[in-house]
Amino acid sequence: MLTVSQQIAIRKGLLEFAVLKVVGMGSVYAADILYRLQATEFATQEGTLYPLLSKLRRDGLVVYKWQESELGPPRKYYQLTDLGRKQIAALDLYWKIIDQTLRQLGRQSGLVTES
Amino acid sequence: MQRIVQVSLNRNPWSIEVDAHERLQVYLSESAAALASDPDRDEILLDLEQAIAEQCKRRLSANAAVISMAELRPALEEIGPVNPSSSAGATPCSPTASSTPPLQQISQGAWISGVCVGLSRHLRLEVTLVRVIAVVLLFFTGGAALLLYGVLMLLIPFAPLDPQLPDPLSIPAKAREWTAVLRAKLAKLAR
Image (cartoon, rainbow over all chains, first blue to last red):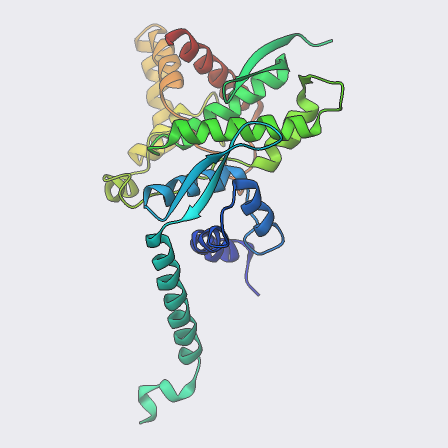
């Protein structure tokens, strides 16, 4: 059984990936992202999301543009950049490699002592 | 009836009750401290102010226009404490920063405001030793060390509360709040 802090450590590293994926769905603003993540393992809060979006923007993975909304002030709508799309592809591949590695590590046949 | 003050949230004016205003200032100054090394600090703070305004508005009844604790507390809970994202290029000094804990005031386990606990962690000394030095200094300087303590309280940022540790005692908790309010007032004066 994983402890809560172990789960948090795993999720923390993957949150950036999850947010990039949600932004990849199209033009989204912060509340869309929170709503999309809400029911998943990656449920998060503004206090975490805003600094993360800022970092993704600084890294050149997402851009935002202001858009008027019917209720309240204009909102920042986020979109992936080309670099962001490449980053998602790279992360997808890396995730597959990690997954494969973890599966293989659990198998007996990989042990050197057997040969 | 509570006293009401005006506050600007993402450049929009709001009316807010005094105790909610103090709580808001504490949240904003703790957020600013958590984002101290973030190049986009000011922008993120404005985004947070906007989120707070929207969350409170959603909770206000139709004919109410004044934010009180009843709206602010659940709003801040939903927004959550600021969790800085460390950017690869943002803090060039991060490798050294990780070897020495940063100088912060640590409210949990503190007697007054956490200056001694913070110093002890930063300098890797026993907290008792730091406190003994502080008390000796207090006697030798005829009380002037108190002033030094006050200055350090104002200058040294507060460490975010660790949910795994017990809550701060009542004096450090109050000290943390008052310092945040005082800092916010000084920042306003400086503007």
